[in-house]
Each structure stands twice: as C-alpha cells, then as structure tokens.
Length: 433
Image 1 (cartoon, rainbow, N blue to C red):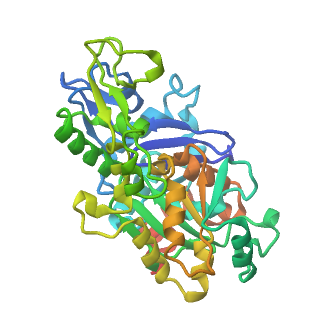
Image 2: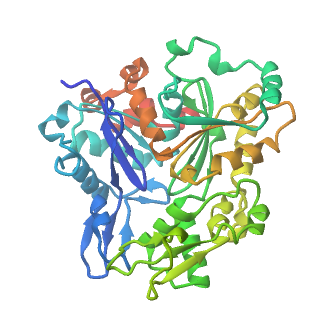
C-alpha cells in the first residue's frame, strides 16, 4: 500500500494536486468553458482556445461553496487519470490504496461537506481521507527557509527590536525543529471567490473570529470589465481576456491611491488586444520595441492599473458599503482573547493568488501598522512568488506529520460509522463554535 499521501488543493479557480514528495504540484484550471461556436473545453484545454471572444465559463463553486460534484468529478477525473498531460501522473488501479489530503471552504455548509465525503469514499473509494479548511494547514508550513518567503515589518529594525522585547514570541517557545506547527497565526487567504481572515490557535481555526470579505479575483475581474467597457471597448463578454489583463497589468498602490494617482501618467501602459492571427490573448506593448502596427487595437491603462485592487482597502470605490480588508482583520482580531491580539498581529500569513499583485503585502502591513498601538509590531509573511501554491505546500508538509496519521479517517471507519460520524467527530466545525 503506497503510504505517500495524495494532496489536492481544490481551489475555486485552479486545482493543485500531486504526491507529498513532489517539489511542485500539477496544476489544472477548475472550470468548463464553452466558446461562441458551442465547443466545450475542460480544464487546461481552455488554454488552447483560439478565439477567446464571448467564451462562457462554468465552475463547480458557487458563492464560494462546492455545489456541483457532477462537474467537479469530471475535472478530477481529467486530473487523476490523464498521464499524457501530467507527466505520467495516473492513479489508475491504485486509487483504493491512495490516502487523500484535501481542503474545503471555511465554514462549508454541513450538507455540502457530507456530499464531499460520500463522493470521495463511495465513488472514488480512497483508502483514507483528511480534509480541513485551507487556513488550518498554513501553520504546518516548514519553519525553515525552504520556501521563498519574505516577512514585512511595519517598523524599522530598531523599533522592531524594542517592540519584540516586550513580548515573547509564542511561536519560538519550543525548539522549532521539534515542532509540527506554529502555535499562533492569523491567516489571510485571498482567492478567486473571496477573502477569508482566520485566526489559527494551536493548529485549530478559531471559528468565532473567522471573517469573510466578499472581494476576490472574480470581483476584480467584474469591476475591470465594467471599467474597460465604460472607458474603452465593450468587454463585458471577454472573461478570459480581462482576466489576463488583470494578471499582467494591475498593481497595488504602495503608499496610497492618491499618491499613485498623481503619477498615473508614468505608470500608464498599452495593452495590445488580440487580433487572432499574431496573438490570441493579447500582450503588453514594450515601448523599446518601437511603434505598433497601424492596425493594432490597444487599450491604454492608467489609473485602472491600481484603482481595481484598491477596492480591497476602499470597497466604497466600487459602491460596496462593506468594510475593507484592514477593518475585517481588525474586527477578527478584536474577537480573540486580549492576550493573543498582539501575538496575532505579529504572525500574519498571506496566501492566495491575489497576493501575487505587486506591493499588496507591503501596503497591507503599512495600513495595519497605522491602526495598532505604538508599542505593537505588525509582521506579514508573503511568498515572493506563486502565492497560490502556499496552501498546497502546507498541506504537503502536513502529510508528513504524526498529527495527520492520528486524525485521518480510513475507508473502514467510514463504512462502520457513516457520514454523520465523520462530520460530527472529525471534519465538522460545529463542535468548535
């Protein structure tokens, strides 16, 4: 029986999967696309669409919850039984001997969580299963420096030493090499559907303080669509094109929106729209390469580049009467016991694809530091690249711990006790509230 667990990070935008002994996971888009000619494309085949205009996308997740296992199982089959596209990766007949580690949305509806258990044990018949919210895995990230990450401090070095002198870092209270997880972390997970703020204490999410911000990659795409359609061309049906523009062009204002607005002419760039002959997705025009062809259609992006992600801090810019990410974090921490609040602000971990936006981590640190008492220090840890892989790396390292071996549910236990037992005693969050 192969003891190396299979890790599947089932994100709403992209699935990351592979065995725990891999350095990097395989990646597949978690969507089904249909072009204007009625041809359907599953997962990574979407990247092969020649005419991306008027492409419609269907995803298994709705409102952040996994609601369609009919579509999700098709995408999983594409990932797990497709050696031609994933470098020979194929579960084949070994699926009944495979141990699975996967994740689900924080505060998933119990009925939907039970559906997942039933599919994984009764249809796929995995040998064992462990699942938890993505945020619960983050403290199990390796404490050494194997992953490229940067820790941003809200104070300079001298002020940071003085602030740290008045508080014992609870994460360092025991020899790091002997620990399986970090004791106190505030996880900010900003993905495609939304942004979750989740304090994790002793490896367990503190559900009473979990907060959700309804701004994510999907929201940014919709806002960028409306902005470009109003100022330039009608792009309300160009989902793939707008998503590519967002990923390549936007950045977070390092200091403030008004500071970047003063220099919007310097930050402007020209995005060349696809002509479906020389380019199928478009590209950024490099001024050093000379003049564009006379028939090229371009979109000049100025304040759109930083105005779109600025809605994380100021949702009122998009006419949303909701608190921004800073207020959401402050509200979450305020619901923790007082002795833990200063520790949590010193141990913030950011994960999710939205933190690939340049300067996001730095801006978040500076904004939070301005809201804290003067003797507190805000420290934010962000991966230098591939922030969307942070969760998979943490899940992979969790699979090597004794905690995983003692808490996973085997197929025999599932058949003996049933799905209700799994939800109540292992995977459900109700007992922690």
